[in-house]
Picture 1 (cartoon, one colour):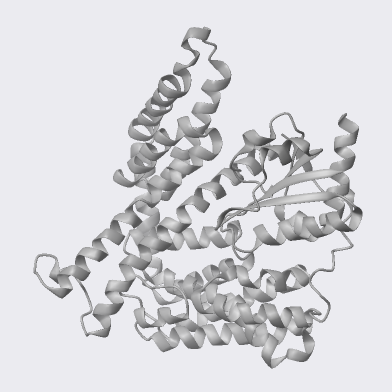
Picture 2 (tube, chains in turn purple, cyan):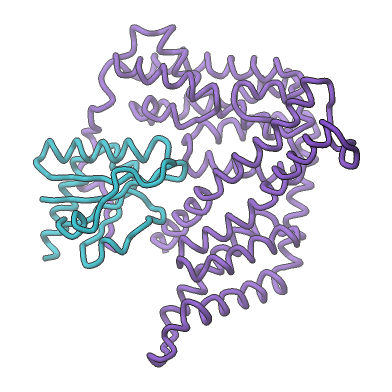
Length: 366
Length: 105
């Protein structure tokens, strides 16, 4: 059972890996026309839906981006299915993801659809024994048909109502949460800590995904905290290598330079080499830094009325953008000052973890 | 011992090259001939050819994700190891895998 779950996690992460470039491309295409409009004093492009001229062109570009964001569930489900059972499963997975979007079954629905399509194909491959003359029909006709009919029955009929009810309830719960003050602070702290916890790993991606799902529901506020926390760890170590340079080896100082860029555009992964030095102490420090930064951003009243853009420059898409920057700086400074106190960065990162012996390593044959 | 392998992580930005480099370096240290392909954000980097795959003693997959081109490794012992383990203790990973493969023969 444990093996099944670790395998399932792998499939989920593969699906997310294929979805990342889609959502990043699409959300930038939504955001850039808006930024241009904001810079020229127009706060929403929606009124230009039916007009002509420059702002209408911006509106049209933005709509294309929204189409991309609308594909998120579809692509996620399609590539979870692909990860499990390859080509014959993609179609059913894509269909299941699209159904999840259309019937308001949300992200959860898309994940279920992806696994359902993938495992149906895998099950059929294993249990269907056809005469040789029909074998060639398996990948092209039989497998896709069975996977799709299962999706139709489960996603379209059986789970349709319960999933859409669950999803709608979840969304409205988060919507109220991101409106009230105290709850919002809790939300900021939780999201900030999650983002800074495993930098690019499953917990980080879960928080990030939640933000993106809410984006498609036009709830923008949580993304402010997420984007803020994303920049914090890499930025923190970049700052730290400068203000506490005596505590860092040459190769870490080099890595610190790269982290300015990572922090600027918002790639948490930049902080990984630093964190690995002493993960048991630095992960909690990172999490506190992320939570602190998001909380300060929240308390100072950063407000998102349009989809916020990631990275430091994202502040221009946020109302009270300075709050976003101050929060980020507070979180980053916390890590920058505390990290060198709890870990030693003066030895090279190449040094191996001697405490891990062959007995601690899990390997599995395929 | 000739080893080929593939590393991959969801974003393909940090873990993927780190694991690949750590394993190749550890291989040099203990006298293994290690070549790691990276399946990250840049697509397939340092790609392993069919000939290289068939000449290897075993295949090390440093990932729990879906790997492109697994058919290259048909008939070879394929071992999956968690990617962070490969970064933390590459030498021990290689040694343990080599032992496991020997024991299987």
